[in-house]
Image 1: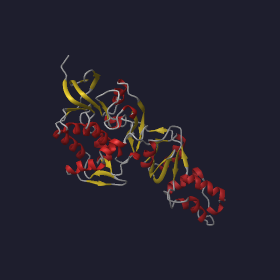
Image 2: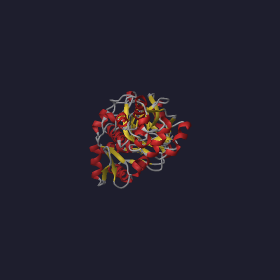
Image 3: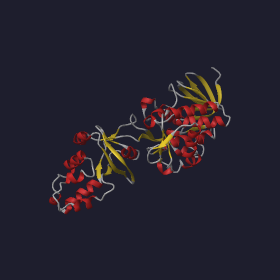
Image 4: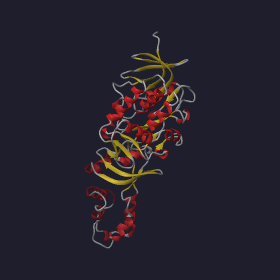
Length: 392
């Protein structure tokens, strides 16, 4: 058998978390190898934010993340903040702007973030091997990684292989397989930040509304998000729907408040003595085509003076508490992230090291920590990568 090339640390996965981890380890004088199975690093970075990379969110707090253990993310997020990554961006002269709700985007291109990380890797002496497929991993005194480019060994091994989302970019279950190989527990992986599908009967009724966007509050259980929803030819999308999808449970309804800034019953009663049609009134607050379709489904439109008090109460309730039960999600193919993953009970929150397997680390999306839409998942990648990079 060939003698393996030895490194202090090997990072499997050349995405956001893996590269940041490699940089920090390299800065500490560690000999670091990054193994990437694709032909280039940072593919998910490249497409993020519409090609402009929403690289962090200035409002990052632990409350913007979901996990079986909501406290797990606190240590890493405190150890590497949005300001820390912004300082790195500014050091490289990358121009950026804040869009809305604290989201920061490159003025130019996501490629600037990738180039920045590659330059930092180079400065830290990190070696990167692309198109490098891992065939097996074993552990004796060190980790032995067999690949199509040879045999490598390292005292520390970091799994930064991402989740199952966006399969066309090469997403696989590699990270979960390695976790299971070493006896680590997995929280059920499911699509997160993903459009929701509707059953065919409801789709047929909404088909003519495809493309309409509505400012609404969407809720599930005790979680709610106020942003736009978008009606599509397959169901519902838009920021508010993507946000709630990470929390939604199959066969249960979501609740949509179509008039989050208004008291519907007050509006209806103010016009009850007038000849104003219900659709006319609703069209002042909702897209006209949607108002007509909503009336066809939930309340036949007629002059408001023809409704009784109980009828108006029912209409107001449906406007604020429209219940829709999705038939499913668009799956990992359209999901922006994977919710679930390697259980946080298996890892140190300070270093991301597996408690049962000294020297084995899991970072980024492969871990059961999932951020809200808008730069939070990048911040988790940077923070968890930094935490491991300071330890390996």
